Length: 397
Image (tube, rainbow, N blue to C red; front, side, top):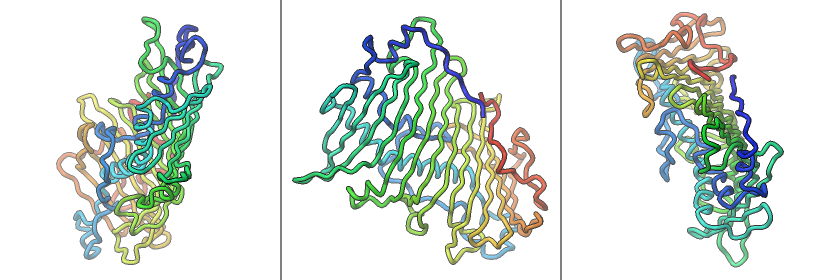
């Protein structure tokens, strides 16, 4: 994967990055570099960058309701439509929704002055709806002029004797001028925020008994705003015994997996994930859990439209040993909503790669852009997507 390299900063800019002539970050620096939603959120479409609503809509499964018979699959009906772009958007929405459960407390407490300031540590605290929120941030200026902010968010139910529980923690390293400041006129300076954060929903539940989510999410991210190459954002998210707060929580046990995301707004991006899901198709009355690998890629074409393709593979669960389900969706659309799916294929293959069942629908001219590679065949596995290959997208900087 290609990466950006920060442009070296002039000495004056380094002093600014440190928050002042004495090298110590100011209260405004602590507030600007707190772990807020804009730093950790991920997106497929422009609309994904908005903070989520207070409730998450029930999520659809990777496939539609079970087909009445295998004939429905081979006829190419929608019973086993993979809906890969819709599913990717749902996964992204689910991740952002759970991030927001905790970062919203950070966003609220940093609106006020810190309750205490000791050296390079600030503690922000206030109470809302019977919950005492305490955010502790310590800033350390590094030799290269960057500043690393270590933080922890603790919650406690308001009581005579409060017991604070750590629900979120991590670090953020800021390189470049402080937020709101401009480097010397004409200077080409990159600004980068990178770090890691852990979200503990078991801990959250211990404070807020009504919280249904369980387990942990961790996020390692890098947001680079380069004056020449533009914006590039990446993230790797890990699920540990995670039970989400949505419709899948009632029919799915703890899930473990990982998500990898990269996006350059106005250029393109990808979202790659491994997860365990209860698939409704093929028939799954026992609610068995299958292993999923999926990759969605998209880019902005010369005519301004967004071309996208999603590939997925499922094994285990209700799928016979040695068989696998392979799906692909191709789409073209805009950046503000999920691309319109104009072609999809879903098939079951045996251990030799031969197709057992196939569903294939194409509306008009195929939207499967050749730049993404060969499209899987209906009859065999020759052109199936290679999920072990490095993921890139056209125009990636």
